[in-house]
Amino acid sequence: MDKRVRQRYALGYIILALLLLILLVWNINAGSVNLSVSDVAKILLSHDNTSVKGHIVWDIRLPRILAAVILGGALAVSGFLLQTFFSNPIAGPFVLGISSGAKMIVALVMIATLSRGILINSAVMILAAFVGSMISMSLILLISQRVSSMSILIICGVMIGYICTAATEFVITFADDSNIVNLHNWSMGSFSGISWENIAVMTVMVILSMVFAFLLSKPMGAYQLGETYARNMGVNIKLLRMELILLSSILSACVTAFAGPISFVGIAVPHLIKSLFKTSKPIVMVPAGFLGGAVFCLLCDLIARCIFAPTELSISSVTAVFGAPVVIWIMLHRDRRR
Image 1: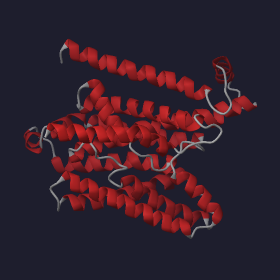
Image 2: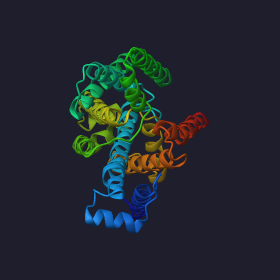
Image 3: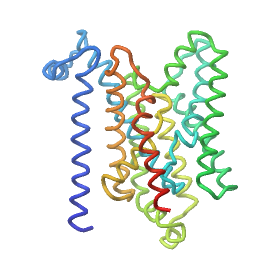
């Protein structure tokens, strides 16, 4: 690696780190109740969570900010793993219907338990979302064996997403009124209502998945150069594909379980990071993609909370506004190169 490339990578990481720091400070200060930097510093240093401002910082804003960082990063890395697996820049958990499958099973579990007055914990939510993700992914893999065109596969993924969404809406129609409110708020996508217990669970899940994804950087790099090259380098293609499927499903399931389905982050962020770093090497993209996803979701959540405060927008509405143009640009750019 020459000096110029190292400098570009270092500059890219510095830019992402600075943006993350700025947005962390901005998010914790801004909202329907504006807090000064000095107020927040005093609250954090004194561990004050009994006053009104202390409650806002410690119990509402900090968990939400950490959730946006962790889940945003997880969603971006999940999208990169799927793009590597399918060798397609617009493959992502939302487009392929994986998030919708997770949403459908979680909704079924929530209705079945809430109607009986049973409260489910984070582990059950993640397991339900993972099952839904794997169902959608299995359908995508079956279709991929029958079609050779990636565009048709993407369309089939979108159709699977619509089917899962329709099934979810059908189930919600017959749920109790109180359950409908909870499901509707969750299904729109939001980082609100996150507890410190949720943060602990998602942190463990995402960190473990990120470590495994980073360890797969070398075989993924070989896989990007073609299956023949990867086999010649000693890569077990079937095992690698299974690992990519499992990791991407776990990451997207974790996001869906806690924040609901969030659109376009898994597609847009990896492409933006590739453009910033001028590379698609997994050893660079995995950590950089996580930082990029965190920055992107922090920005979108800030807009969702503050632009019409105290009314709050769903996070998917904001991510779609910023992410959809990136996807359109990718498609136009690919069409020009043909």
